[in-house]
Length: 198
Image 1 (spheres, one colour):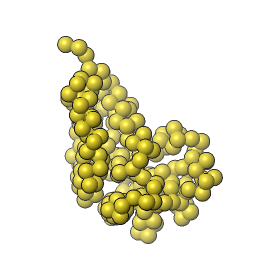
Image 2: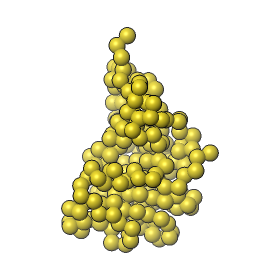
Image 3: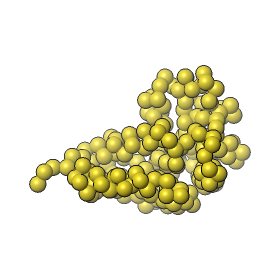
């Protein structure tokens, strides 16, 4: 069994999304904190980010925010998160989010969330990141992405085995088991990153 100590969560900062997404963010956070799992997140004070931080603080959980200086200057940072790391830019933010984590969990989000998720899928394909990537597919939100990834595989832009880079769940209660049961991955993945012509 994998020892899960800390995870990174990618998710939306938009406050206007449907309540179901806020419920999922809260339920995921409760699941993690109840299992003594610490959280790295993007440092925001609104949207799903804010819900995650609010819930973790309410439960006395371990949460670390990583936010670029320009976002702090816009007053987007959560004011209650004491462990808040300021970074220069979005690139450094992603680098710090993955520090000392045992898995990535992605909730629904916009282009920022998609940027984070796709970068780490790419890094895992290249063997540069080897931890589980769990996607919580609330309301079928990510179905169009999975259709595109399946097309990439069927048309030989990716290998069949690359479908093991990520694991999909529909509910936060499935996340911890998904991390534990995710297929092993290592740096050797770079040797079969490209799809060769037969």
